[in-house]
View (cartoon, one colour):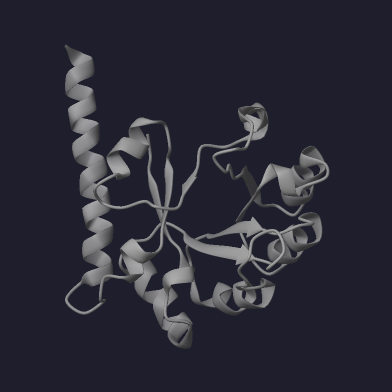
Length: 191
């Protein structure tokens, strides 16, 4: 299984956003993650499509957008048009999940669903394996063992100072933990 690490810009220094996205890409991030909150569906207010559009020219890696908004469709389309590559949303925030998935796919983006603990698992018929939030070096192997292949980590990445290889070091620590878990899992399966 191939694993992807996506630092969340919510923990980045917004005064240096271009430098931050370039630094995490240079350090080996697979994706850049944007947490989009509308102060209605969730109580915080964060970034809009203009931030996505502003960072797109400075990246070669995909932009992964997590929409915590209601309604979903118009913002999904706006982020796709702004350069997002992957757009995920909460199924309970959409009036018609299949239509929202189609809006995202029609614009050439990959789509995903995001689950809160109380979200019914019946939505899994439309889901892609994805974990967002709380990912740290000490738990990434357990999360991978549960079947995830993409890991969003904010403070675990941006909390590491970039001097002395901070971003690179933490991303390497994630990959090492995944590699060691894979070796351990493979060894036990071979018995």
